[in-house]
Length: 248
Image 1 (cartoon, rainbow, N blue to C red):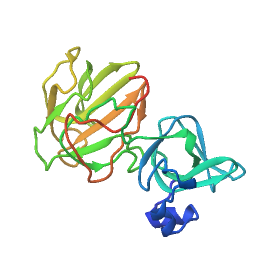
Image 2: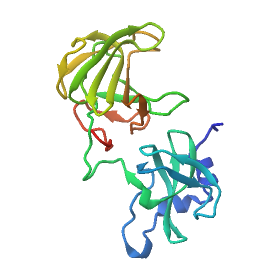
Image 3: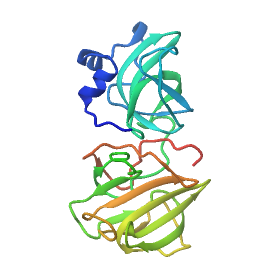
Image 4: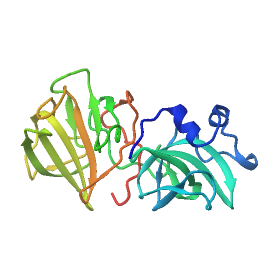
């Protein structure tokens, strides 16, 4: 059962002080792998525990690709380096081993999808139960251009009155699809091949929508994958989403 949380309650649950969060001292004089507030993802099925140590109770087992936020660390125990993580996809927090975590903030791994619209995040991935998407607004601009996040083929162009309204699904190979909901207009047809950055539609408020925005998802084999980005964060069409998605 999920709990309401604040940064203070998370810090308390991890058994640390505010100084511990901001200090983030490097161990043995080396640079820390992560920093406070950095988004990371699990690289394997990973146990997260109440406190550092393999003898501590398991809070949850997260799946590969699930995204969390660094809340404390590092600390060494039992031959491992541990980080306090708030796992955003399932709203739990605990301690996880560094070697099974990777940053989603770009780097040598690159990124695989572009932001499809210019605007700001109005509802991040996992912000509420069942919200496996990122909502992006653009000052209410009906018709704000929406672009393909990656090259592929338009698998679906359809309308859903009680949900997505006008929406598109684009297939990108290896089981990946991106979905674009609440569109005001279409600029592509089903079956059309599209290139990365191609105009595919305009932002709207069709279907079950409280106002003009883009509801954007990344899926693989029908499973929703997390998308980084915080509430109010500005995004720009054509710039990279800071996450390395496996196999794309």
